[in-house]
Length: 137
Image (cartoon, rainbow, N blue to C red; front, side, top):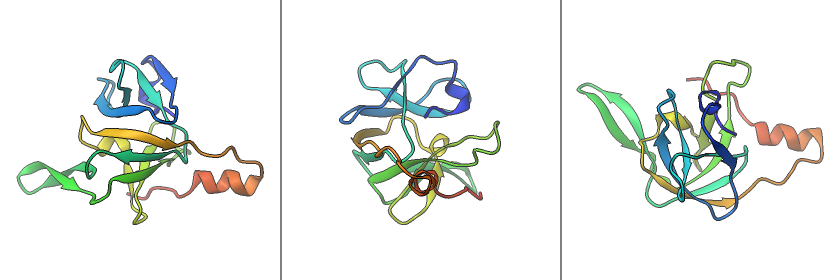
């Protein structure tokens, strides 16, 4: 999906094999852009598996301001969280250690490949599994 603040940006759905880049679209959030056209936001479904070219880095506030913090992971599953709050960022990544990070907290310019799209749920239980956890941050 594309976060609420990317609704005014031209977008398309993600496809397996897509080369994506984290990008600031100037709307107050970070999202994924298409490799072939950086002005197009790529909307990712919850449950989509991604592989990053390098360890994913996030923006962290330290004693002297903003700094890069490594997640130590190169793979993640796309999730949507806090969906009950319409004006909160929803797009996030779940890393193998279970940590959730909002997509808008990533550093711009990171490269990722779409490995696998989620299977379409056939039961309410499968649908709930794709929704996953609420972010408490």
